[in-house]
Length: 170
Image (cartoon, rainbow, N blue to C red; front, top):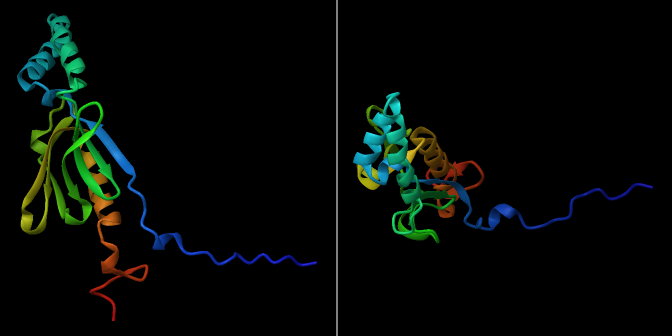
């Protein structure tokens, strides 16, 4: 007795828009909280004799990083890139992934102690749309933004078929 193993016809999940989902979220690095004190603390920690003083300077900055009035996080979703503030995240700035053309990272300005740098989000004609200061692990976050923009940044009205954009269809 043969069973009917055919898959029943159901609407394709690609026809429904995906709900907004977090891809990656990072908190602003310590050098963005209070840069002069953070730099001084980092220099003191690198010396053997003054390291305890450096740790005492960096400890309150770490706590201040999560203070409700200073807490800043960068959130990448499948639809947009957000700058959020506060413990209960409230969007302060956002940009749609479809507007992102490139992400610039100046590798000469990477802070090697805090592993952070500034990212500039570029739109059409190289216009700076958004600046993300003190991003921890900036190279990885830059690649995540570019990958998300390539994967999710094309609006559904511009896509015809699974592989061709509207301009390529004939």
